[in-house]
Image 1: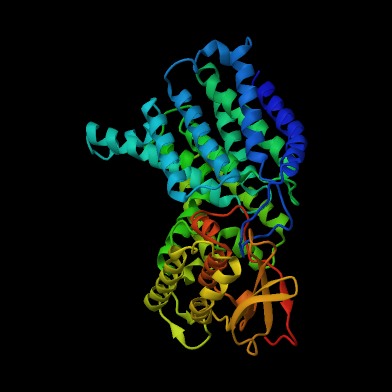
Image 2: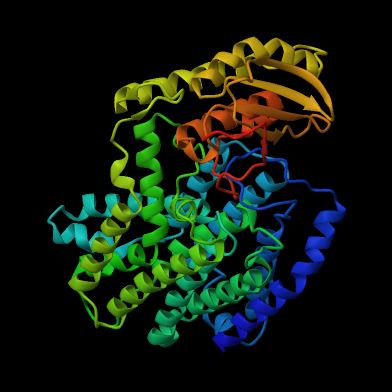
Length: 509
């Protein structure tokens, strides 16, 4: 009967999605994000996550109300780990939906994720394999229990954000989650009646994600938004903690099963945290240097990047499933680690510590000096943002006031001048444009159609990740206080540098 849950989820989500897209568009919801990391063109509705949660919920309610294996288990009618998982996933989905509709600061979203994880743990969810591993190392029962409990909550929060960070290309995060739910479902089928509730939930989630992917494949008609990535990102690692081998194995092999399924998102997130720290960037500020960005930068087509990363996730998940059926062992775990190291080297992440040219193109900067420069520029931009708008100050007046302070920051980034235009009228600006080889035009949302035009002294592909991040901060500052307060606090759904570049005279370089 598990297949019924999967098919129902696919048909519900796939069938409801076109109507939801029309309703979203009719409400005039606009993608007002300012980002050099966008790869999509036009207004793509972010209603996919809401529909996905709705379809999943309907399938689950139908399973509980009917005469199914799920209703017979009574697993969701009491305080149980499964109930905690579902409530926690719903909490994450709702804060994500609020962010999609209204906007929420990263600290509040993180707080809800932590509360959801603590609730799931409070309802009895535990990483038993990790506790067994700690006992195996001789840490003692009280300490092992405490560390395993804390690690369970941490794994759930990390999982939410790891999946969210992977939601950068059409179908990427959805496909990774679908593969993960497949592992959970296959494991539940192996264990029979002992895992009916987990199997039903995994089947419903898998079907719902596949229904979403019908409309999210490249070129996507809809995005899942934070609602979808947070919901799926909490549900997947939670369900993976219920996956265990058919026979006893060494504790570290059992612990590796959820980690191997989540290997790609966790690997990408680890690299993101490390590189942002090394570069002096805020940990929660988005950048254009994820695995999929680097593949795109090397000329790999969008659809092929997604296919390669899907295949990689499927390979790691297959290795994890070999551990479930008792075939795999140390070689599957070792193979995963070796593959991660090789991938990091091939993508050039080992070059993070090398010296690079200064942003203005003059001289070389070591790691410490570059980090200090980035942090100083960030402090300057944030200081201007904290000043806010003055009472009854028009946008034009604010731009004219900020222009002298913004120009030195942009010059440090290799941008000798800028101007703000609405139509053919120049409203504000500063600097010299003779050194520029091209204009980079970026819309300023919420300003009545104004756009920021940056005169570039370097080629757009030569902009370093730190420059892109700092330029986005400047754009957000000029767009207004509300947008600046939210921008840069969380990872964007869209990614990669592809805003319009308009040639000025003859391009050199």
